[in-house]
Image (cartoon, rainbow, N blue to C red; front, top):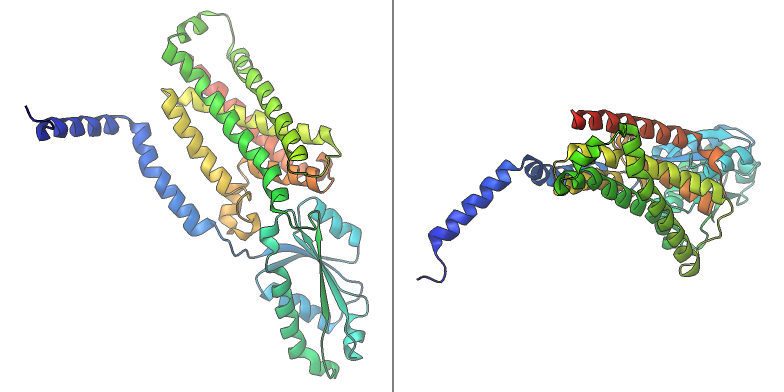
Length: 373
């Protein structure tokens, strides 16, 4: 008797291939996952960000000032969203995550240049995302220097120099953990809540207890609430543990508004639990439920702005990223935790999360009724 029979091994390989081809869900994952990752990394992910939203604060306007603003836009690194004379307005925009940079032009910029003085320009950077600001000062220095060399003769200045000062706000030491840990809370909550819920109903099918559940007088909404609430409490426990670790081990700043933080966490958890329950009604077994979870989780992680600057991605990728709940949660948790913001600063993100929650609950209830049929 041969130790290894080629014919028997070949028969086993053929049998395994047939099983893979019969499992449409696994087959789709094998084909779609690498395709999706290739497209996302090839077209959407950009470690050299462009068109970062910027506010300009100035109290006087002239030909040279307009030339400098045009030079900023021409770098394609900055995208001037607003020009204002109010520093408070610009700071509120940064606190709400609407702009990444604030460039302060001194009141007598043109006069100082004409007198061959050295005016001081201040650039305030939202340092909660250190990756996005890595070349900001360099890009601004090059753009302004080129603009001044080009236009200095119009002002009859012998030299046209300025001093650029950078102020990193909310994370002055540029600590990476200040960027990573608040976002990690959203990543863990997204993965665990969807994964736990997605296998809840499929587990009933596999254990043969679904018939008992259907025999009860429970309505679909009652079943859904009963399935979701235990995982919601577990997720709250995860949040408390993460907050303790972040504070004790990593020394992150004290949170000033716990109500806003837990409200943001609740919105994210409910939205994820809703989509997880929907997956559980679509999957035929726990393996498929887990595959669907990762198929949803990976693009939401890559397009949320957690690993790569959100505004550095192309517009279509930003539009897709706005669909995922974690994108809005990241803006809120970084603002509440690191900037001292509250929920009222994130009305758009709250509306987006609420809309996703309503959609996921409606879809899961519809799918659960179909499961009963």
